[in-house]
Image (tube, rainbow, N blue to C red):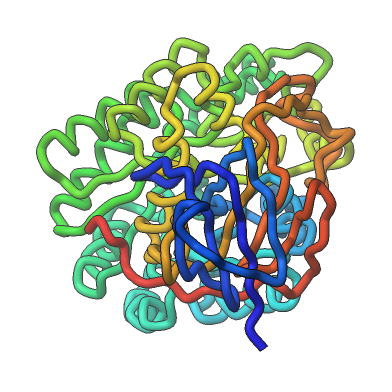
Amino acid sequence: MSNRTLITGGLVITASDELPVDVLVEDGSVVALATRDSHGWTADRVIDATGKYVIPGGVDAHTHMEMPFGGTTAADTFETGTRAAAWGGTTTIVDFAIQSKGGTLAAGLDAWHEKAAGKCAIDYGFHMIMSDVTASSLKEMDRLVAEGISSFKLFTAYPGVFLSDDGQILRAMQRAASNGGLVMTHAENGLAIDVLVEQALERGERDPRYHGEVRKALLEAEATHRVIKLSQVAGAPLYVVHVSAREAVAELARARDEGLPVFGETCPQYLFLSTDNLAEPDFEGAKYVCSTPLRPREHQEVLWRGLRTNDLQVVSTDHCPFCFKGQKEMGRDDFSKIPNGLPGVENRMDLLHQAVVEGHISRRRWIEVACATPARMFGLYPKKGTIAPGADADIVVYDPHAEQTLSAQTHHMNVDYSAYEGKRVTGRVETVLSRGVPVIEDRVYTGHAGHGSFVPRGLCQYA
């Protein structure tokens, strides 16, 4: 028995079009789009989207569910985190599996498959964090690409935990150049930052605001420049994660002007928050400790401009939530012990719609940076990231006029604070389909753990 859903009366917005058309869904896929008066479609379920937007489900290509870090573990499980993502209009996440030091890529991947299998409310894929670049792990990269794990993250930060030296990064990039994989980098000069952390603590500078002061924008720019040059030597494409500083944007823009396949991601926290938040009194600033860190407010306009000019291509969340009580508090007397990460998987689509309302980006650019480009970048398009015949029916009915106040009292992330507490935004998710199945229906959660499937990914479509 086929299962047909008709979404009628809305404005369908994709990265390329805005069309007042109806959408017919059958057996989990989009089968047709047509103007209302041109078809005689019947369906088992009809969703009236009059006055609403009909948009592709969001693709959040940077999340960390259940991630062990800094002596604790991210507060969202794959079950709670993907449920919150659905509430926020995101229907696919790409999370990070982690290779242990001395372990294999396969063992790290298996551990993350075990965490996620049967738990997710929406579809999910994995990137691979390479913590230990060796001859054998380089060889494993080929097998992972064949299994649909086609992107690999390396760090110039966190000495003793994740940091890879330039030679290791170059070797991984060379391997990616041959197997079609995409290397992602966290670009900060971790060795220099550790010197500045030590010196700050010696001076008695222990409050959360010093986290932002020691992780200097110039050290983000230096590492961004360095990994760009390494990728150029390797002949490999490069994706720089969570770009926060205007100096780093300048490095990306310069490389792209030279025609290099270099790509940049930023996150809502860098677009809407600043060092003013890190400086909030009574240790409240700890809520905003993440890396790369929040920057002074003047960096925001450069990031928005980068999104408009396509020097930055993707907005992901880097969702890595730690509760204020019991987790962020671990660094009450030492900012370097505050777990790095912010909650945000539920807020991204709404915050970016607010950016449309405020004139920072257009409606189509909203869908481009939040849905279509991450899907293309990470080998998910056109199954994900668009509304077109043959695409998965990952569809959000979005009310562009509803107003809401973001708050920990009403969000669904498993964390005891909101990074955007009290912020008023215009626009709200009303109904969410994941492969044609309602996960949110008229602002009621109807999904369940285990609906979400692992999605093997193809290669980057920009490289």
